[in-house]
Amino acid sequence: MCSRHLKLRKFAIGCLGLSIICSMNIGYASASKVDADSSSEGKPKVAIIIDDFGNGQKGTEEMFQMPVKITAAIMPFLPTSHRDAEIAHKRGYDVIVHMPMEPKTGKASWLGPGAITTDLSDSEVRKKVEAAIDDIPYAIGMNNHMGSKITGDERIMGIVLAVCKERGLFFVDSKTNYRSVVGLVATQKGLPPVNNHIFLDDTHTTSHITKQLREVEMWANQNRYCVTIGHVGKTTADTLRNRIPQMQGSVEFVGISDLVKEKWGWNASPMLPSNNQ
Image 1: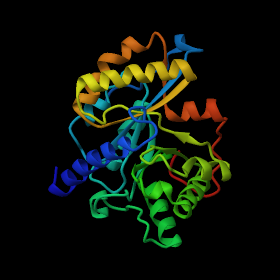
Image 2: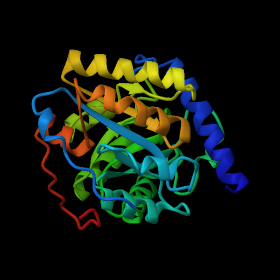
Image 3: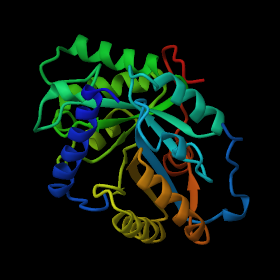
Image 4: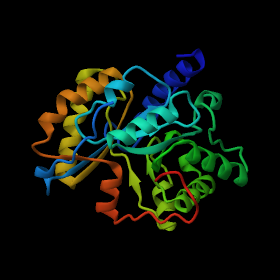
């Protein structure tokens, strides 16, 4: 991994930890295709989103061997962005754009290519979102990479969500900012107000991720569904593979699109061409 992308990875993890501390939802916040578990009808649904595909990081191949459907959040314009989207699609995973967005603290230059920052004009924001969607094949949604500053900016999020709606994508608020306006703006634009409930690996240890997965299971059983976000990495992948079979007795693992369709009746109606088919 080049030093630039290593810095991006380290900064993203650090910023994620800081964001979660101040968040309202602390701690919550080529093989064949995976098959749906037909025996789990009626069980609470869990959608696992794995961020930071696209850069060939350790754990990428392990994430592609999950025994259940997950959602691959892929950063645009990186060395393995296209490859990861193709593999994820062939595996039957959902693919979403992991959109780099300016955080409240830290250097915006560490975000990676194509990042949205608050100094951009309306037209510049629109062009960046459109370019990111065009760069990720099979994308059916989007979530934010970092972005604690942008997700609190109503002007910018209005543009981001307008483009998502035009392209037939929904947006998942990663909840790196407890004052996020994403849910409000999404509702105003007729998009489902989808957000993350629990971060799995804000601390990268097996014991912590195991504890978070127990929280996921409890949240899902209390609320009938749970959206959880983890990151590409061997520890997260290994812990998921060990814990998923133990959880399948009480929850069903689904792609984020399955959950959005069931919970909000989402039906993508793109007004402009997209490459997400």
